[in-house]
Length: 80
Ligand SMILES: [Zn+2]
Image 1: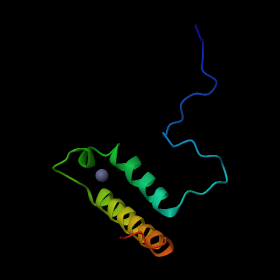
Image 2 (image 1 turned 135 degrees about the vertical axis):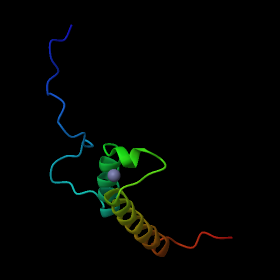
Image 3 (image 1 turned 90 degrees about the vertical axis):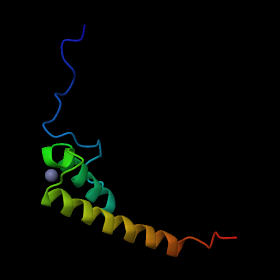
Image 4 (image 1 turned 120 degrees about the vertical axis):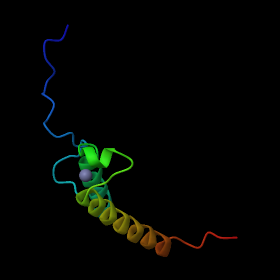
């Protein structure tokens, strides 16, 4: 049996991203939101939420919507 894995699990579970690579802002915001929401007891309760979780969620939605708007503007018209 393996005595030990090569590296111990870090205290924070972060996605494996190579150092120096920046995620898109919306992805970073989503990362911050999920990191909070998976640890916060209030955010894990579907009937509750905390101010931090609400703020993080709103920031993520805004960035995601901006990104989608940009994509929609850049993409060629795809309607019939
Ligand atoms: Zn929370």
